[in-house]
Length: 452
Image 1 (tube, rainbow, N blue to C red):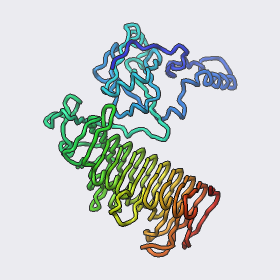
Image 2: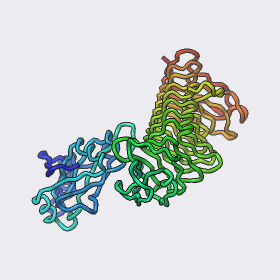
Image 3: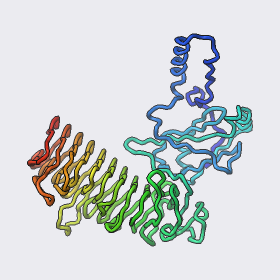
Image 4: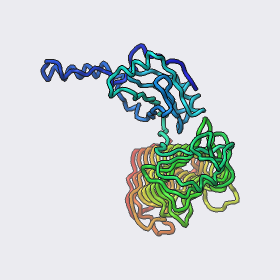
């Protein structure tokens, strides 16, 4: 997508702060006056300084094929719905770029900005430290959603019209199949992007290489829509992987980490999973360090998530209509949580067969969730041989039919021994009771909960 010569902001609010003439140290003024001058200057230029709301930003440098008069920026791993603003920063100042232009450019993967001779000469005339360093900054914050895990290494592409004989290193030289991706020699920080809106059904996505916690290997989509992987994702003895912006529908288990292996430092973000037996199944108690955030899960036969292991973060997910397979005789939940040190925050869980979150292991933190339309909102069952303290707070639990919050007196690990801090929850019910807290060998702290 190309745009004409950019227009500078007439009000100066977009001025790059690096161009502000900071020469106060050369003025013959005393320290108190200097401090006052600094504070005044900060107030004058406050609109150009970073603010907390600017924290979620993506910065892009021009592609190597750029020239002073034609800047090319490669735009990938951005959801067009998340674009809030965009600015081009050059030695001459800052220029706002319309959101509609950026969103259209995301479809092609490249934003092209043509500049006038005067603008190019202006950049060349600046100080050497400023020369040749334009950048595009896109604010992508969206309420309740974090930025996608970035690709920091090489990027490979998969297209329905590609060939596995290709290099995979550009959209025009894309691979064709999931099998080719599974055998690729990927390294930490590399990424594979599937063509959005297309289906790749030759195999389950099963990476054989691992990344690292700081530089995961990323699998996602390019273009305006999510790519579809009908066979799902299968993990065995891998770590440092991120799966994002993909659609899985109709698979038996959409994301499955084998019980016979170990999967650690796994990120699942902004995926759409529907019409599956289980959406996410971390089946090994050796799994650790998972981040599951901003996914949409619906119409699941068994539990929405079945999670084992330690140190999981489950945040910002929307989970609807789980446990809908009537042929399954055992209880089914929104999240079946067999994780030590789990953090479950800011999720919406609606329409579950038994519990919104069924907790089995110690030290859970469950807060700021919206849970409703099932038998139990939050439930505890003692599967853990050890004891800890679980904190359940600031949740909204509604339309339950048995109990909003339930603590079982005993289960397969014997009498309940966990301690509980249950505070500031909002509880409403369709039938049954608000809370049913059975005896524990630990301690209860229950306060400031509201019933309506």
